[in-house]
Amino acid sequence: MRCTFSVLTQDSPGVLMRISSLIYRRNFNIVSLSVSQTATPGVSRFTIMIDGDEWALEQVSKQLMKLVEVISVENLNKSGKFVERWLSLIKVSATMETRPHILQIADVFRCRVVDMGSDALTLEVTGDEGKMEACKEALRAYGILEIAGSGSVALGRAGFRGNGGSVTDYGKDERYEDEAYKFKYLLAGAGESSESFVSRGA
Image (cartoon, rainbow, N blue to C red; front, top):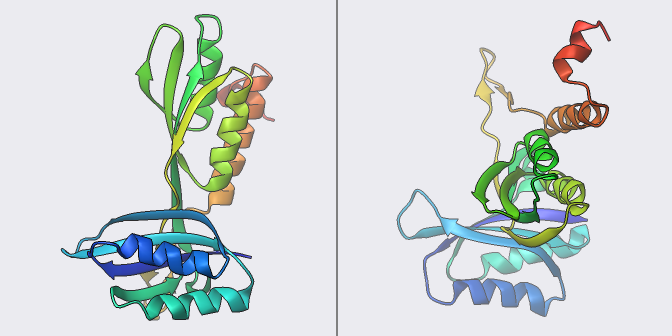
């Protein structure tokens, strides 16, 4: 079982080491750990993704709350829907012959070209973990030279309050975005644009 924790802490020297050591001592695997400042001065947010069973993850949450610097611990998987993003920079070999194909793949995955050289392109891709892996797999055939990536960053969805007082989540469902990527990628492989596909009534 994989869970994502959002942990608010005071900005103190050594807090990163204490949090990671606490998890490591209990023999849990940290899949991803990211930290950044929040809108509140002096407060940082840790986004920690951990593998473990339900009981063990509950113990992690309780143990984290015992640290002096920790303000709050939220298990985002239990709290409901949340927005999660990863970021990767991918440097891929790109000759003049392969460059158009690589740029087509970049368009499918909504990558940004952040650097260009005579023999390589560097792409920036953001999305969920599945999109990261799919993009790398699509580019692998052209020769990935280097990869640098961030860990997961996540926040609970806000939603909107309707007339009845209930909160409705109008955020995009990642499944629909993934299907759009697959649709465009399949058409690109067949040499057909989505516009022509629609115009012929398919």
